[in-house]
Image 1: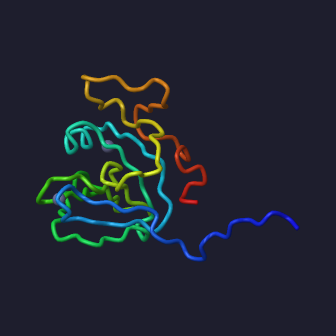
Image 2 (image 1 turned 90 degrees about the horizontal axis):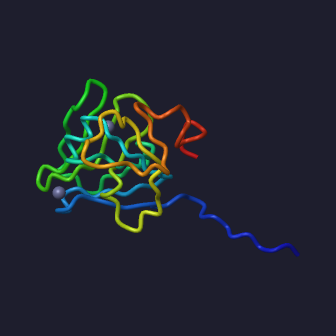
Length: 154
Ligand SMILES: [Zn+2]
Ligand SMILES: [Zn+2]
């Protein structure tokens, strides 16, 4: 007899939960999460007060359980940002095109099980700190397939 393999659950359940500081926004994620990417563009810098560190999932895998205080701000022609109108917590970056929504990693309930993969848009980085040289850092967008080698969530 061969060694028994653990049987994965038949249907994927909740992989992560999170929310803002005041609890006005609570969510859960029912699919895989991307490694965390630091974005240092000016929009992320100014909305976060430092820089964004975001994971992402398929939009259909993000379930809002409480969204009474969720407010959206169109930060660029192609995307909007979701934040809590009460406590100010930055939660989501949602592009108009594409299957994914980014989730600010610090809003996840810990432990997240995720790791920071590297940094993008470092040309817009604040000048008051240095990046870890052990992690990849890109001046602009990440190269195709960098954090999701298959071009999608696997
Ligand atoms: Zn809040
Ligand atoms: Zn950014």
